[in-house]
Length: 194
Image (cartoon, rainbow, N blue to C red; front, side):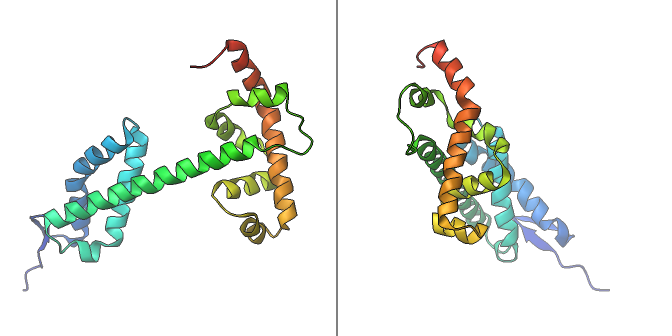
């Protein structure tokens, strides 16, 4: 009777190959939480999501990664953790920037005045909270725009002409203004924000 092959995982041996990655993940979770905790500064949910992303990438490369020395595994995981964080941060900043830019676009019919002044009291989180209230096609167009897609690419994905894409973005802005008007007025009454 042949002996079962033993796998070495981060300096330990195991009889059951299906548990090799689980042991690897358990071994490296604490350092990943520490590293990502420094980047995310207190957002436990974001840290958990990022640790999950890093370990998923490790699982996808497990066939190769399992044969590396522990120091090399740790270095790879830390590099991947940093890259996952940076990717998420860039996406979030890009989405917030586009959301702010779209929200502040001037419609041809706008004459400025008090209504435009109100919108400096609205925050990105307020906008994101009301997105589910947009009509489905308007919301889809708006969300594709927030992902950084051009009018032409959105047109390809939705099957609508670029002019319709522009009209839907204008409609999204108008509807968002209506949905958030009370919030903006309430914040203005509260006085200047610090």
